Image (cartoon, rainbow, N blue to C red; front, top):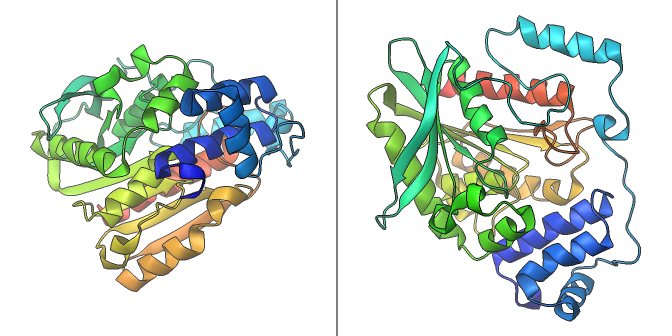
Length: 337
């Protein structure tokens, strides 16, 4: 790995650089974020230069439709009507501020905090949602972005519950207090960079085992999804051979070691924004490895969307494409779980 960075540090820095190049953050905020990892401004400037980032000249990219301008009233109304026609919750027609589209007390579901035991005995901060109806349901492990188990991620588990799945999300920095304690997104990302990918995979295995142990979950039908950082961890979990029938990584960066993908039995739908050139560079290798395994695989790019387009609290949210990707996700899990 160049400039002495480990895999996670490089990932976090590339996320910050992409935000800078897209104009989401300025020079001062970029340096502040990077310094959490490097420890000083001089070191930050050196690392950024080595990674090809000129802090004095951000490169403007084509913005996703929702980032360039608010959706028209007609488009928003059409998206709301289409979402309302679905028999389950989906991404909202416009950006949210609180990340909530399904209330925790929604009568369709049962949702709340859950303690998940890690292999080392640590208690992981978890959130579990399931349908309120009687029965046993397929399970989904949801892996958060590089900001922890935010309200948006908890909401995603609740959306799954409205669609007939039980879902759990853990905070991979639970040992450090998770997102509730590390409220500065840059500080959270820097702490995240210290955790080796195999350690994170082990914690997601604990989440999977938690799901299997729930009386409302069919232990033979477990899937996984993740977003941004979590998409990359999803690929890593599939490569590590976790017992998953299906997986849907959202714009996940390719892990350094994907050798296990060629032997997986997991059906994989990869969700990518067509404008997310940095992450999309890894698609050919991911697809080739999965095809070698002979499993169902689809690497789908959504036009007019960039990285993180599914997050309705973020600057790159694209409601129409987020909804399409969500429907594809639900259908993929219904088919292969």
